[in-house]
Length: 482
Ligand code: NBP
Image (cartoon, rainbow, N blue to C red; front, side, top):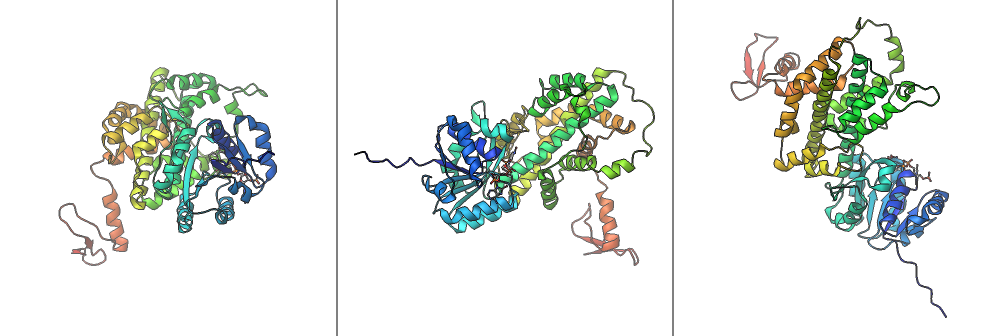
């Protein structure tokens, strides 16, 4: 007589078998973990096992209760479903099936206030909730994403090593670390996406300026980006820009970029970043310009109505094409440093407000691989925050200050040439304006304070003595101490 052995329990489970969840589950399986699988529509679970059963050991379930029962304790459940309502629906269904100490990971693109709310609710029930930002799209989920887990530090002890193992690695270092409590992981992922918007917009402006100024074909500019990818700008986004610009449309024989409708879409993480920055009072002008630039591109009736408005007459004459390309490269690098500097300021501000204690250098380190903004220069950012952990301004770090100083004249030439020739470069221009505003001895904010005091008695402070003052604008215009 043979006794039937119970099936071994799975070490981790994934709910949601769409592109991200299935690839993440395969990634765990390829690393030797036994992975439980569940999807609302059971056929998708079966499809994953049928197509990728060779990747490792899967424990598919058609019922959530069976899925939960197939997991070893403490249970580790990664939810990879549509953010918002679907994520809440899955959590509501899952929670009654779980027990004290089990860990629920939300790996979707959830909005961080939702993560704060969910973490508090699950903590009350004795469960750990980890909002984990996961970047890198389907390719990253399968081969190694950048993972930004938040939630209780305690749960990281049980979960972190697995996440680190399946994350991307750069120089042997995993692109995953505990970010901070409750919503910290999803906040950092959100800012990552915001920076991605800025980076893409800046690259777009560099391309557009060179096209207008040099009359260069996309394929020629592909060469420029490929060359840039060998230097300071070395990054995934520059690399794919070169590939995109070299692509020919099979149907027309034209450059593919020339047959794509020029209206950029968004899923909303850029918007969230700007909204959160406004709430925190942190100027993320690069990200905001990038988000608005997408909105401008999609403002179809307005663009149609503006078609015949007067602009620049004449052609853009560039005497030295190579020098211009080098100016654009420097302007791009300086603007990019500004955009990242602003993003890290936003992380610092949120960290202080929520008590997250986020290590900004570690964030730059886990963005070096697996994610869309992976880039060589993130090493420099990590080094800057290691040198000075409470660095108030990234562009004031010696390395970046020198890099920006080296490019500032080029930056001014490019921004002014863009304006003179009627080519929009909002992210280049606003990054330079931000840099100049920070450097300024005096800002017109003094005048704004006076105006506010004039119409609203909002008071002001003086440069020469302490206290708060108000001028009796509608009276004898004498000054009173408030
Ligand atoms: P989707 O965002 O397209 O979501 C589809 C999944 O959600 C399916 O498994 C679907 O089940 C499930 N689902 C929905 Br919709 N409503 C549900 C409900 N009420 N109850 C249970 N399950 C429900 O999948 P994705 O593109 O793989 O992305 C997953 C998460 O990862 C998202 O939060 C996304 O923002 C994030 N993310 C995506 C990427 C990317 O490149 N795609 C990158 C980084 C992060 P069904 O099969 O039964 O309909």
